[in-house]
Image 1 (cartoon, rainbow, N blue to C red):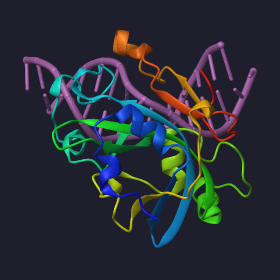
Image 2: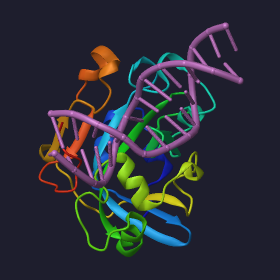
Image 3: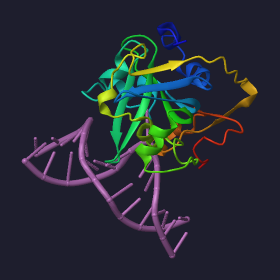
Image 4: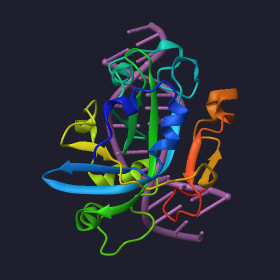
Length: 199
DNA sequence: GTGCGGATGAACT
DNA sequence: GTTCATCCGCACT
């Protein structure tokens, strides 16, 4: 079943990011359903987090979805060629989000392979925030969409991820964030082959 | 209007 | 480990 909006509207993005591990992310784009188990996330902690786009209360056309009530998507474009998917959490006007960094593909493999121009499964398909968006067909059209919609949603398949199976480490690619770059806010499922490489 | 750098991935050596 | 593809958003003027 789909996660209820109350799941996203809890007030601790770090806790939500860890609870998202083992949940199943689905997209229905061009009438093709794809899905995968979330195996890696990162937390972005709002106006006091220097790595967060909403640091210091920055509110622009791009960052608007972060300020929505939890349970919507925040998709943005980076490096001129990659889309990155975030799950907005917490209440309205509290801009916190969980970045989905990697999934294990389980549904719509044919569509994923077609989008990536591959003919067999390998670990590069969905390991990395840009890679998984391409695999699942996520673009800016999927920005600011409710996770209760029939385009983009997350289900609970009763996959249990114990706290001891969660690997915690500093976030990737945010060293400009000074002391906040050291926060252990990257969460991976230990022993999953589908997480992005350690750096 | 212009300039600059980024929450990256993939294909190289 | 290195390199490059390649462009939007933001902070200026």
